[in-house]
Length: 348
Image (cartoon, rainbow, N blue to C red; front, side, top):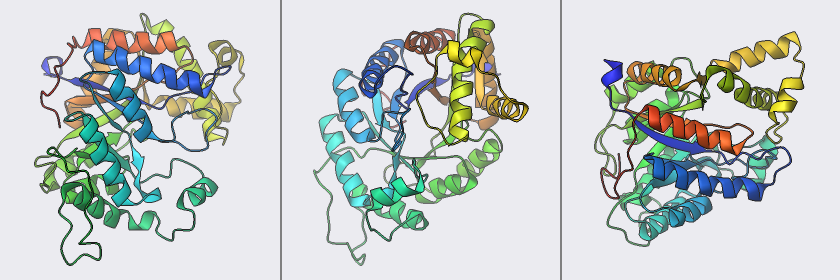
């Protein structure tokens, strides 16, 4: 059954910085990778938000959406995602109404609850605001209201309108890795992306509950779900294992509090892990799909069956940019992707 399943592939890009490279290099590679993904037939391209990082170059997905949408012609472009507790829902609605005006029918508004930073950086982003993540449900409701022009008249901000006016409302995607995220998405009528690459345990039940409890909204009348997966695809399994070593070391260092650039393959191969570190690497590998095209396709199809979704948002962070591009190309070929035409099934 899984072999006959039609699956869409999309991209989540964190704009990783390589050891010896610069943030400008990473952002330039994001633009090139988006063009590459569009030519291969990927459905959407999402930009992540991370703050204060020496290893990830993207603190502002809204700016990167503008740049990448301008350099492509039809692939959907969105945030994966805006960390909503840092910001005014009104301002986020304005930003994405403007993006929709510039690139009609191509914009996704992905939001998340995680800080995307450490505590001190979160305080700097808030800059004195007392409104934190505990207000996230209210912020979702207000963001949807401002985006859809549906703020109730008796709301304290009921007379406020987000502009510019738009004919098409960008769908709101909630990105999360917990049952709370799925419950919020279902209750507020949002599309839902489960981050398997963060939490590979229990996501199937979260997604099932989302589909069962979904309540329609003006922007998302029916439940839409996908999963974010970390993938390394290479010509051979041995190549994939070697390429993935850079991610192994980078992820371990992040767990240890060091958010630096992506190490080279040579550095990763030379590193000698202590027994506890090796255990952590093995644990993190549970969140990774890797191998040759046939192996990767089989594992990904099995995931779509378990989650009952038909879209995978693929993240591939490795040292060599050529290996990143090759991984996405092999994956596209394995799933027989074809370039999509602008305007077809835009929101989904």
